[in-house]
Length: 459
Ligand code: ASP
View 1 (spheres, protein in one colour):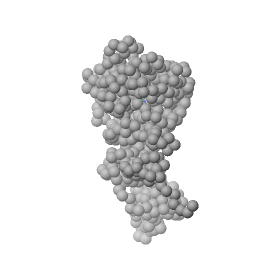
View 2: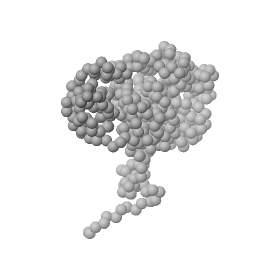
View 3: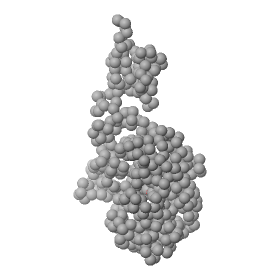
C-alpha cells in the first residue's frame, strides 16, 4: 500500500518522486521518476525495485528503515483506494471509535493497531509453545452448547432440528474441561472464546472475549499459582523485556486483607501508577465460597437461597472449613484464586469439588431445586465414573494484553470488537432475519407469528 507523496529536485532538470510503501512489516520510502507521480494513495502496488542506501543528508534516524530506500524500476497498480474515512498516520485515539470500528480493516492499517495484532499473535503462540512443552494438550470444546453457570446472562441460539429448544453459547468451557479431566487428559488448555451478555466497560468487551483456559488433575492450589506465575514471568521477560514486574514472587493477599487494606479485591499494587512499564501482579485468595448476591443477579432465574457462589458452583471449599458447610456456610472459604494485574482482574480459577456429596451440599446451600441440579446431571454422572482431584485457571487474554500494551480499552487489542452499543464491528450484527429463516426455526418474525410459506406454482 502506498501513501505520502513528495518530490526531490535534483540539480535543475532531474526530478525524483517519493512515496511510502507499506506492507505488514512496516513502511519503506520509495523513490522514482515522474511515473510515480500518479500512484494513488492507499492503493495496492506491485514494484520491482533496488534497495539502496539513502544519500547522507536524506537519512531519517526516526524511522526503522530511515537509512535505506527502494529505487523503483517498474511498478504496477493492482488496486486503487477511495479516500479513506480517517487518517491512519496517527495513533487514532482522537478519532470517533464507532467510525474506526465501522472501517476496522482500515483502522488496523495504523502502526499501533498492526503492532497490537502482531503482539497478540506472538503472545498466543508463546503461550501455546510454553504449555505444550509442559505436556499440556490443546483441546477445543463446543460453541453451541448448554447454558453454563458463570454468573452472567447467556447468548442463546434457536435450534432448527429441535424446535422450541435453544443452545447457549459457552460463558466458559468450565464443565467440558472438568469432563476432560474425567477423560484422563490431566493437563488441558485452550485459547477459548467465551460469550457473556454483560454490559461493556473499558476492561470488558461486550459479547465475547478470549481466555487461556487451563485445567489440571492431581494439583494443589499452590501448583496452579506457581504455573501461572512462572508462565507470565517468562513471557514478560521474553516478549516485553522493557517491562518490569514490581514484586517477585507475586504478593498473595487474602480476600479479607485486600478488602480491609485497599477496599477492593483488585488492588493496584504499582509503586508508580504513572510508569507505563511497571507490571504489578498479585493473587487474591481465600475468598468466601459464597456471596450474598441475590439469586436473580447471579443465576438469572435459578436458585432460591440468598447465597450464591463467589466464583462458580464447582469451586471446592477450603479443607479446614468443610464442616462449616452444614453449620455456617457464609463463613466457608473457597479454594478460589484471582489473578490481578495493575488493578484489573485478569483471571480466576479454583480447585474443584470432586466429591458428589459436597457438590450436592453446595447445590443445596445455593437453593438449587432437584430440577436445577438436574441441569448438571451429566457432570455428576461423569464424576461417578472416577474423577481425579483437579483444578484450573483462566487468564483473560484481552485484559492481559490491554495492560501489557498500555492500552486504555480491551477493544484496542481485539481485531473486530463490538461497539459499546452491542453491534459488531464492520458487519452490523445483530440484524433482522428473513421470514424464511424465522419459519425454519419456528420463531416469531418481528414479533408476529408466521404461517408456513405456501408453495406457489402449478401442481
Ligand atoms: N471458568 C472460570 C471463569 O471463566 C475459570 C476457571 O474456574 O477456571 O472464570
